[in-house]
Image 1 (cartoon, rainbow, N blue to C red):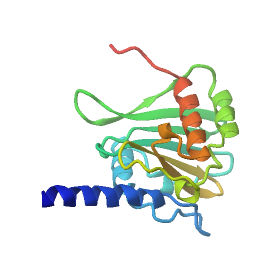
Image 2: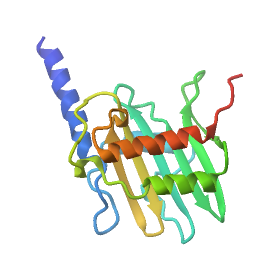
Image 3: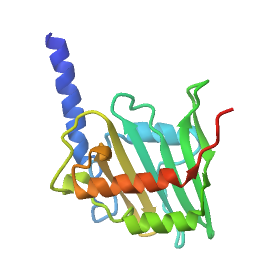
Image 4: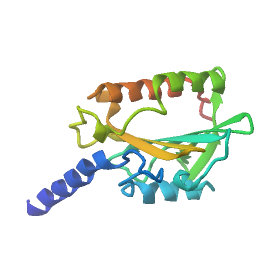
Length: 194
């Protein structure tokens, strides 16, 4: 009984600590307290030949946004969608786990309309402006489920924010992120298996 209790306490501390996971950038444009998920995110990005986004410094006219959905019970399986704009072109990819091998792969995504139109919608919905969940009045009270982490790398610097269980809509900001995720997922043409 005691070991089960300590497992629950550890889980609560880990997940409860997620609220401070990705705070607003400090004066040097680096996020504070982001180390909890960095090892997982670094492992995943490096396995597909990418650099961690916080180490990327884009030049003027380029930027990248990565959206991670991290299930609490399977932290090692962290899917990511990356939207990158460089040289007047869009490259949108998804990191996924291959079912057969368990390895991570990066797949180029095809939009249902056009990436510029989709990006305009995402910007209007506030993808670049949302605060971290820790800065909102109504933080998630759910300790399991998924955490969504949004990383943004602009020429002006890097910032990131996160929310837990956007499907529960604990705050207006959480509901806004849920709309962003829905718009993005609706915009991707999914290829039938096989």
